[in-house]
Length: 302
Image 1 (cartoon, rainbow, N blue to C red):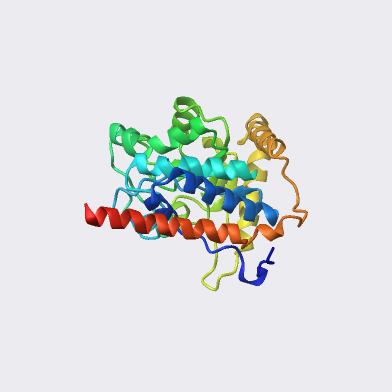
Image 2: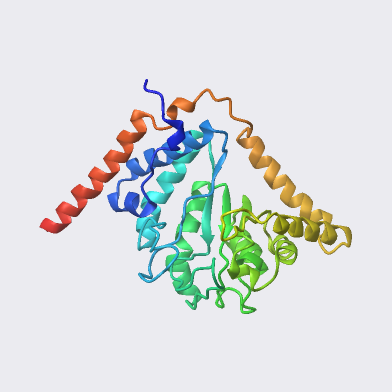
């Protein structure tokens, strides 16, 4: 077998939008397993994917414009996202669907500001929440909430990341999700305008989150370690003064350990590096492009 050119990185992956355009569940599953195989080969045990957002707003600057959604309807998203999850699982990878309860209809990028979604509960259930409900039934491992406000779900107008009615009431209570809730980047402007990391981290855990993410980058492209320190200090203070009860911390720790045990998370051995940029993976990529081209040709004829 030809050795991969590791200096060039992973196999070049098409965006979810293109995979969804193929409307081929089997190819979507192969795509998911390919992603999972390459990540696991280098010791990465989770893909914070798939994006389960329904791209029902053509002007969305962060989901649709970047090709991150599998489709413009919940049915199209589920058609590709659920097999993609199955493919990641087949590779032995944990999965994390995002951005609950849906970032697809926003007109604002939560990296830069706090978006609002003004749909009523019925519309949210029918479109935005539907793929998450299906993914939970499929067995998705983790879910990432959005730094987005949904007044119909939480009249206090807290973003989902900090909303107990959304994370604990809706996601855990109504939808029955028992897996791990992991936040989006707490350094994004959409959440920073509500609270800094030392406060938003505590509030996210109290709302129902289990794991926190803070990877804010400077304009020069380097990480801001002071944010991680602020986040850590805020959690330690809240745990010490009793604001963050030990029972709540233990609850999250049990979920995280159970998931790591289930997947036998550990270091890469290096034995499977040949899977990276393998001929089979390039064949899958080519098949996706061919399927999309065939579908577009058929649509043009009809």
